[in-house]
Image (tube, rainbow, N blue to C red; front, side):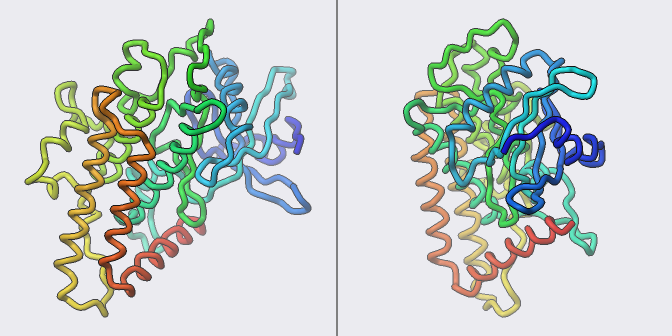
Length: 347
């Protein structure tokens, strides 16, 4: 569909601050409602701050990559708007499908409350499913024909969750096609990720590559299962998140795992004999996931696995756990994840 500035202004109540749901380097995102296919649909409108150096190139990058990319774990772009506002200034915006469960950063680090006032958190299997979703999207991008796509800015705030807690990777403002000529007069071309998530070789001016995305993904995995951001104030230059996790292997893994993940989730009907074995299996699976994160975030690009290999390893960990989990507990895990997403959406 084609949209005008007026339509987007009306959809967001004049880009009202109450409708602001996110802000990044190159623009702000607003929730809105637009009419399409004979009904009103919720949308997310990313308005570019064209006064920011590199914003126009960021807009072009999102258009170029998302117009040719289709995958269930990528955000869905509905349309774009390139027009002028009421003051006659240039206006550019991208319109996405609205995903009601926010972003992964909110679930990992911000208080999400249930109606009763209790803190809500993703359990470990929910996090694993999200990690698999993200790896699936990267595998698709890195295998994209005729030219692989490099995301360049993978981090929790750029991973959005739909009503079923399925993950969708978004914000392609820094994305590149592999071997794309990125010479630009602006500073956009030199941006290759966010502090803590960008691969070390990018700091040396190296060309972007799939290895860089794999590094960011490895750091993301470590963050998801330790609950600690790579920019946490306890990490200095000497000890980053990767080294913090690596030093805990093999004897102290339990001490660095996000303690929320170790809470027992078995139902009252579950036999007490299952409790200890399930906890041990859970810890073993989380340790295996952290190992994948360590491998992916290796300092040397050539030592990192392909994202497809990491994906297969995570799927094997998931399948192993489900195979040994009693069937009634598998159903409980699924129901818990469904209830959690519905509570967040209604809130």
